[in-house]
Image (cartoon, rainbow, N blue to C red):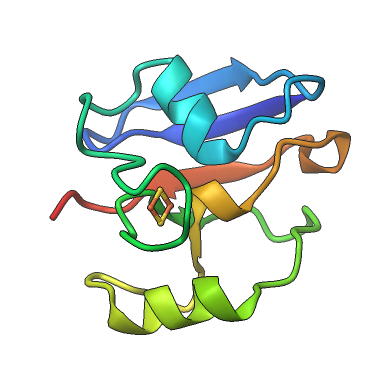
Length: 107
Ligand code: FES
């Protein structure tokens, strides 16, 4: 599935993300080294660190509902916007075709 990820330097990357490997958006960012090691996915994808926070820029791509863990983490995180999500809580599926996200600043 094709997704666009804008890194923390503002560079846009169009990524062919695999849908058959049970990856999350956070893991795609790591696999393509779009953020320095140790600055994303710090908690291993448990919705406990917010290092994978991203802003959803596309409006018509369906995303999974936010679960309580993600909601709670985002309520404590920095730089949160109305379109913030945790990348580790979004599995890569075919529904994400055309998704555009921007990585939130590192903190
Ligand atoms: Fe820690 Fe997503 S990797 S909240």
